[in-house]
Length: 415
Image (cartoon, rainbow, N blue to C red; front, side, top):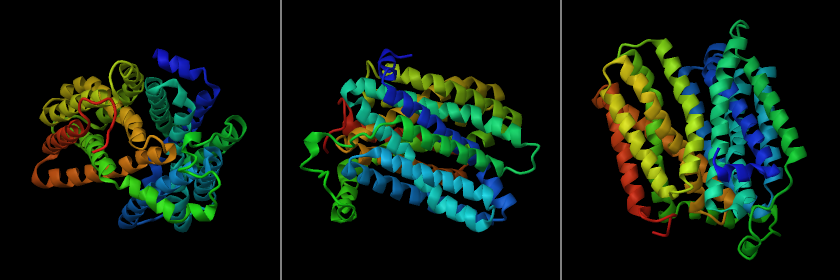
């Protein structure tokens, strides 16, 4: 474990936040793999309605994450907002289980669960304020550890839930488990996390602690959105989204290449994904240590280069053993791409922890959208292997833009 992480973990607030993020990951990992089964197979949504619902939910999540981040910075307390969005998770997952209808599923997926998703950037913002006195390298290690905690949930939980419910005949109880996980998280945050100011005292003149809720919804909120839409931030978001899109394309084409071009079967998919997920947890902590000696930019550039090579080799793979041999490279590169951008994005608006952390959700949405577009284009002009190669070019483009904007610097600077 990195020495900086050991220092951070002595902080009881950070330790509790780690448990909170594990419970957040538990709720998502319990339901996300089975969401389409519940919505389409068990509740009868059409494929078209389900697709539109998921896209709309992603948009709502981005809008709410940014708005809640702005509110957190202006109110000066993350804890109250965290409790509010956790209750949305309790209600959303609970409603699907207790009232399993199309309407309850749509309302939960479109409103309550996107609001609960805002807990992710809120927790990262809360931890950032707790670690602000530890120095940038320590904060990066803490972010890496928290991201590893989410990955650990995804390694363990989906398989266990599937095993437990396989004989039940319905995946609806997964939503009960998720709701109970949210409830446990609510108690944890309420009892163990102290209220913590969202902004430094030095920002008092800029962000009035006396702002009323009416003022929060005023033009000052629009000004905060304008800060995200500034050319300095948008170009860097585009660079990170292009890099992140490679993860989404890999998730789409890897199973298809395994069962197609290299002659594997569905059993190989499960084994490969499991190996990569487990290695990612380890390598995320390794990247936290690497950032003790490299800047965020240089570490992210190195990780991107590794993952771009992985995508190119995936596209060129012709035998099943090729894919297995790539698991080490894939996991090492992916660990960098899912952990290092967190700190980089937060520092784009460094004096606004809530707003800066909301960029995490913005990047997830943009990266997913670009990944979907690359998959559509790649499969139209080529095959799945060609799509992987196209994705590697997108990664190179994102890396080039990142180095053009911030190459040779330890942190993002004004354009």
